[in-house]
Image (spheres, rainbow, N blue to C red):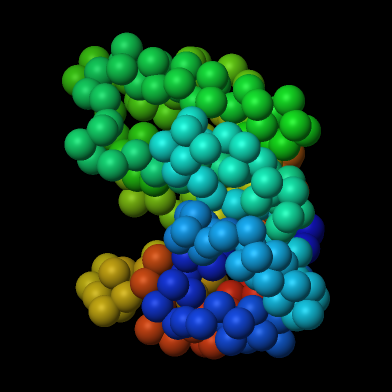
Length: 253
């Protein structure tokens, strides 16, 4: 098992990040994953201060999310942030519903767009990939899947596989993991609550306290190129509980 990371999006409602860094470090994490709102609006001094705060808490940020617009239109800014924070891998995390293609050709074109956007980052030595949600695994009218078309259009794209979102999309995570094992360089480790439970947390659960068979999934993921395993919960009501229970589960594997 690689070092366990923590997606800071999970802590967006538990500010300030100074306190979040301390909490996740004390829970046993040595890495965190950044996301757009953490750094997109910060100036150079604030980014440097964030790095100092991470260092003070013994945390590294090897992976980060950046939106497609920033990746395409603010290349030098993104590269400067990656250098300052020590980021090694970039993942484009989302596409708004109104921007999503509706057919195979559109999704392939989106993969081509990501491939083009990745060029300056891969040239700089960074890993670059796509982070999925559920919509990539919902069949198109012709029976094909957006995820396949994204990768067809982007032959050099890595994949940050969010396993719980694959399940929410109605797909078999093991089949998809095996299909693209050579693409997976990072994994989001989160869990889904039993049906009808945790409605106040949007049906998500702490890792090991939901319905996903994480012990078995980890065995399958061992056959991939995954280097980073990142705890996430999209809407936790107790950050300390999430951080502590999730890392305890993962370390038991």
